[in-house]
Amino acid sequence: MKRTRWLLPFALLLVAHPADAHSIDTVSLYLVEVGDGHFTVDWQVGSTTLARRLAQPAVFPGTCRFAERWLDCGPTGLVGPIEFPWLEGSTTRVMLRIDWATGSRLLRVIDGRSPRLTVYGSPAATGLHTLVPIAVDYMRLGIEHILTGYDHLLFVLALTLLVRRGRQLVATITAFTLAHSLTLACTVLGVLNLPLAPVEASIALSIVLVCAECLRPSESLAHRAPWLVTFVFGLLHGFGFASSLLAIGLPESHVPAALAFFNVGVELGQLAAIALVVALRVLVARVGLRRVWLSRAVIYAMGGTAAFWSIERSIAVFAR
Image (cartoon, rainbow, N blue to C red; front, side):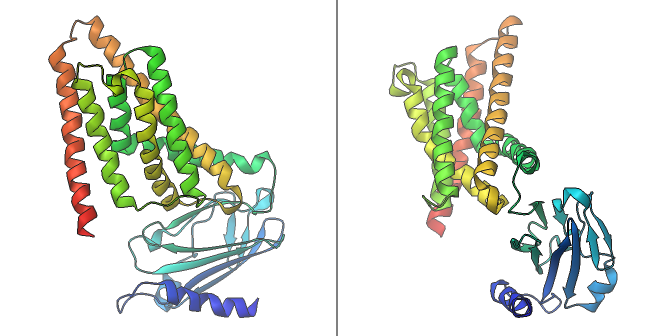
């Protein structure tokens, strides 16, 4: 245990980026479970100023109570977010280590770009109750990602304009779901790995192509078999989803569950967007505003935006 404590700050120095003269070289937080939900807290700071300024090293989950060098999380255990608000925007990194009474260990490096870590209890813990916080967090993250990931959202919206028949739209969206779920899982599990920049450029180009097909009256492959074209494009979008999920991070012992719930969240957000478009289409038709120029204006706006993204991202590929 003592040898590990000596090595961890040294490892932190190896992974840290060059810092300015005012940064803190070594910051570490060790939590050791000595009883059910009871932890000793060892907070090692290289700056006496920061040590005096902080009443406690982190903001622990609401069920936990911190007092001096002890953390009491009660029967629920250490479950929930551990936040370092003072770290945001800083070049400092915190080495966080949690040792559970079961012998399991969690080791993370937290930096100013994402000064927060969600803990889902001991990795050795089992039971449905351990999946509840994972389900809530990763479903929410999936919904947020599809609704704020504007390239993925525009692609889905373009599909609703390309495919008008209900059954065909269901088949097309199902193909997209299967495709991006496949590459998402393979990438997260380490089976596949593609550079992100070309993938992002290809995703933007896929929106341009779908918008172009929306304007074509001819019976092209996209009109005759949209599910096939969408499946191919969905494989690309899965790599984009995976990059975001990997950036968020996954609980080590619950990777399949987190992956599944993230995917469920993506689908819920996707279905919500499609339902909104269909509802607006019905509303526009009922009030008599349905005009060819209106549909074309929306398609041109979406395609133009995606074309700008594809050019911008393609330049980024060759600039590397």
